[in-house]
Amino acid sequence: MIIAEFVTGNFASAFIALVNCIDWVKRKRISVVDRILTALAVSRIGLMWTLVTSWFLKVFHPTACTKVINFTWIVWEINNHFNIWLATILSIFYFLKITNFSNFIFHYLKKRVNKVSLVIFLGGLVFLPFSYMMTPVYETKNIKGYLENVTGKPELKGGIYLSRRILFMLVKFLPFLMSLTCSLLLISSLISHLKKMKLQGKGFQDLSTKVHYLGQMLQYSNGSQDPSTKVHGKALKTVLSYPLLIAMYSLTVVMSNWSLTVFQDESVFLLSQTFATLYPSIHSCVLIWGNKTETGICGKQGAAEGKETFKKKSSIE
Image 1 (spheres, rainbow, N blue to C red):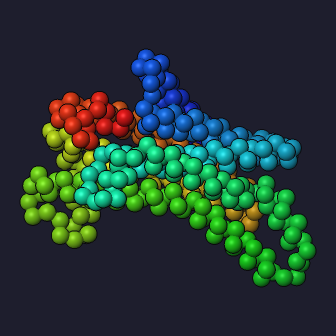
Image 2 (cartoon, rainbow, N blue to C red):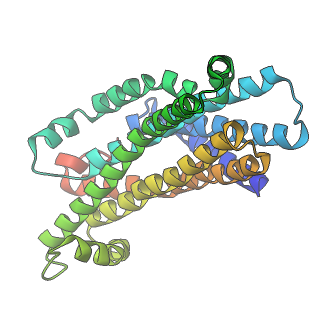
Image 3 (tube, one colour):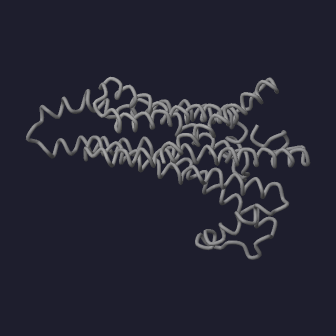
């Protein structure tokens, strides 16, 4: 199973990077979203290679050199960090480019979406050292040596481990929360757009009704002739897939980390690694489908309207 995930994910990520590079050579320029997609594809390839490498070492070379294992963990954490934050930036970019709210702060960010993406990327680098502190490599070098000096104080040991787990969750939770917020706002934007077109009759009066009709809205957006409705629907599916997949991925990462440091159960680690590989594989395929559709639809609307959000060839350029 993990081999199939590995091959599929690498093929999809390599396809994204190759297409964007070819387009870059032909057009002599590359859009911001294509830069994000290319960087994300490269980080995905690195992430899958490190995941499979760690799985391979545990299965076939359990007595591998400690330096090799530590190096694999460090490379994995770097790829994982950039993978999560680049995907988050992509979700925010789609949200700011496609949606439209009557809010001063939103319009301010929308006009400066390129700078917003750069600021978020640089801000994410602040959390990279904290991500390293969560790896077994750091724990082996710094935490265990300290715990040897506090033998007989189990409450202190438990507090140290608990604080590290909380820090780990906070570092990973922030990009997830940002992506989830973008998804919810995209849903709100699609609802507002459909209400303006008077396609849903009485509209949606409460949250439960909105959730009930969400599936119908997504289904309707596929057959709609309105370009903006199609863009909202396709973008929503693309962006909404990320927080769902990253939630599953984060859970498997936590289980993988705990299986080595707390439970010391290799079978749990191997199972977690297998499920963790699903995230980069599936999301890369979703990006191929979603980016092509949104770019084409937004480009047609831009040619028709010739102004505002979709006045360029692509709504995401």
